[in-house]
Image (cartoon, rainbow over all chains, first blue to last red; front, side, top):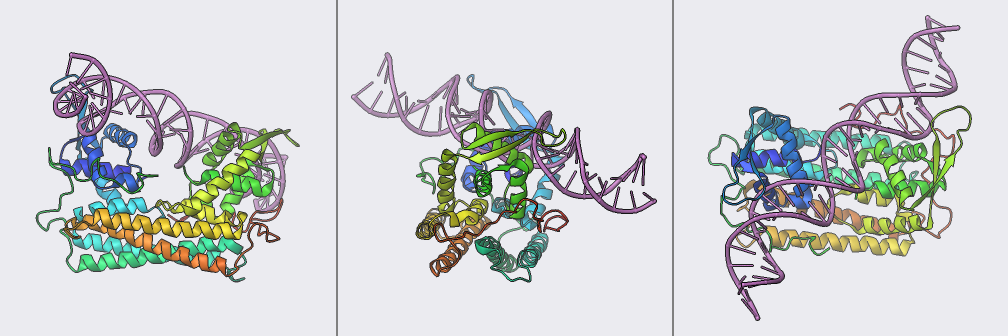
Length: 213
Length: 213
DNA sequence: AGAGAGCTAGCCAAATTTGACTACCGGCCG
DNA sequence: CGGCCGGTAGTCAAATTTGGCTAGCTCTCT
């Protein structure tokens, strides 16, 4: 699964109640369209799918003023919250070469208690090291590297990425252990959503990298 | 697009003529199922699609001995070769947060002349630096970092990944410039496919990381 | 000789993702 | 006042991806 479900669940949860366009807007605010598949089609699809599965509750809203398409507001259910936390824990520890799930999880990590987040991040480092060992053991056999020719560069790249990822995670662990950020149960949380009517500084009109391609 | 097209085109090209299962086997040999979406369904789909688009030529093979499903062998066309080289060039330079396309391109980079590969890799470094500048400029405004709360860790992670990727690419450039590997037009190329009947040391029976999850 | 395991080769339905498209409204410009 | 631009809210068909399924062999025990 991609990161879309976590992103959508997290966005709805922070609002309490949100319709599709609000979610879409939040994800854009977070820059999610740059590092994940958070495109309109995917977002609306995920909302409907998760409503069907009981993770979200759909409220049909009467078209307020003029015609327009029928709006639907979503609210997260008990079951949806469980799924949300499960995904969050999973993605914080998973090292599977897709950086988007980690990125999404970083955005929500403060929904967990500090101690748990630390434990998960340490688990993440362990997983990376385990993976690294597996690569070097299986793909760099006794005959020595080089027998793979340029193909060895692929393994080299994997190993380099793993090392870099582990190093970064260790840095994050230190910052969190040192008291950075506000985690669950520690008072007023940092809110990354826009209030109704608040101007979106990251919305249209703001050049994002990649727009010119 | 994912890396699947480049992988499939490259595999068919190295064989000269290959049927689906051969391609599937090569990709497994390269470990592609671990870092890309190279699953049977995707491979067979890509073969058919590209045959329909004229990138591959499909030969119906009469069922050799007993019944069995009708085999199809594929051969790359002129147009397919062009597409192959275009994808290769593109993926060697593209820095778009999906490591699988780079990984796939690394596997085939020796199909280009050494000088061109070097130029593309240098272009890649430039792109990464450009991207890094965009992130730090747009997402770390005058108010200073920290106003984003833990969300700033996402940008921090991006920047760290970019730096790590650039550093690795510079290392590769040095190795290639120093004469490593055999590039197009430099004599006997390194072949990463299995000869008909050769045993696949990476096939089934060999534990891959992730099998135990 | 028959049961079962495992390989070869490939197919398929369901789920997801993409990228473009619709429809309504308000403002603004000449 | 007509036309068009931009924002809001969302839909849709087509392409792709997933994960498991089929069917025919070939060994290997028993």
